[in-house]
Amino acid sequence: MFRVLLSVDSDEDRALAAVEAITSLPGDPEEIHVTLLNVEREIDARDSGGAVRSDEWYDESAFPESAKRAKDHLESAGIEVELRREHADPAQTVIAVADEIDADRIVLSGRRQSPTGKVLFGSVAQSVLLDAERPVTVVMQ
Image 1 (tube, helix red, strand yellow):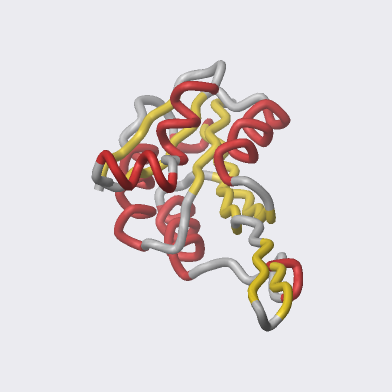
Image 2 (cartoon, helix red, strand yellow):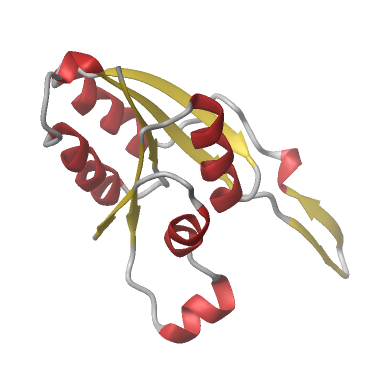
């Protein structure tokens, strides 16, 4: 069994591009198991109106449409898929879940950011690439 951790956000085009990277893997699709992970970033903010925490609206079962479409495409290719949703730091969670399931590969999609954007907001893909101790495939969209 070849275990893949596929991390998707809410962008359907990026999710489907990552799915294509998985469906093009060599070998029998029935020998691939995908854990499809969607991570909602934790938010804790304060302003003059009080505090806002993402815990107040996070729903463990509220997968974005991108995750549902990715799952459908993978299953139609004969690949077994498990859905998983977490509420935490995305990069740290991708690495932790990959370790937990002993993934053979991490697949995620990246988006182009300006150098300033990377400095200010960081990049999940970059963090995973730097910190993962297993192969990572990043599909740029």
